[in-house]
Amino acid sequence: MIILFVILLGMSITERVTVTLSAELVEGIDRLERNRSRFIAEAVEHELVRRRRENLLSSVRNPHPETVDLADAGLEDWTADLPDDEALVDVTGGTPIRWVEGQGWVKESA
Figure 1 (cartoon, rainbow, N blue to C red):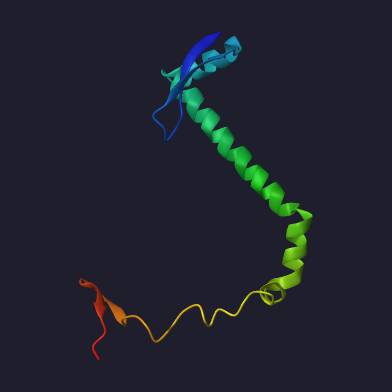
Figure 2 (figure 1 turned 45 degrees about the vertical axis):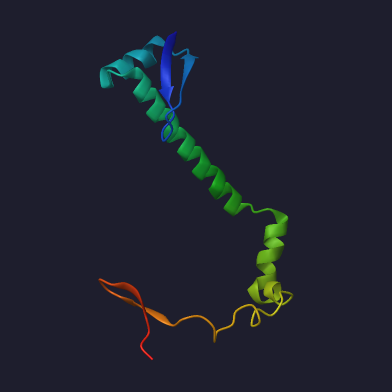
């Protein structure tokens, strides 16, 4: 049995966990890495990323039925019921600006 500290990547919090591994696995880790905790934390993080990616790909291959209906409807059909956005923005209001390299945003000359 190995007692180790797992460092949660990207966080300053650590949790102490107990993990039971076969002697062969421990020997294999020790041959490659002096810090067992770091090795196991990296392996676990790698596996979590792999499983999240696998779940996302599975979701894309087998989408929820409502998502399929939305995709089949198409963007035009979906947006047809949305309110007209012409009145949302007054294009005559505001101050005309432009981006100038080295200066940033500057007012347009009249």
